[in-house]
Image 1: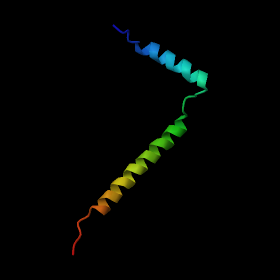
Image 2: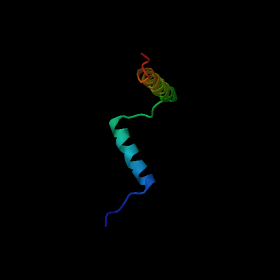
Image 3: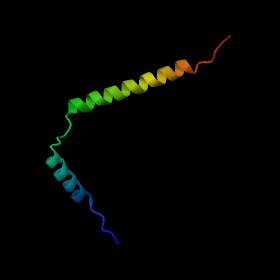
Image 4: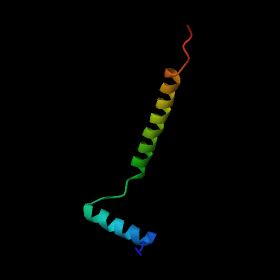
Length: 58
C-alpha cells in the first residue's frame, strides 16, 4: 500500500524544491494585474460572441 503524504509534508517538499530553483512568491500587484487581464479577456470574448452570433435580418 502506498503511503500518501499529508498536506503539510507536501507543502514543505514543494517549498524546498521551489527554493532550490530560485522561485519566489508572486506579488499582489502581479496577481491583481493577472486577474484584470483575465477579466478583460472574458468580457471581450463574450462581447465578440454576442456580436458574432447575432441573427442576420435580411
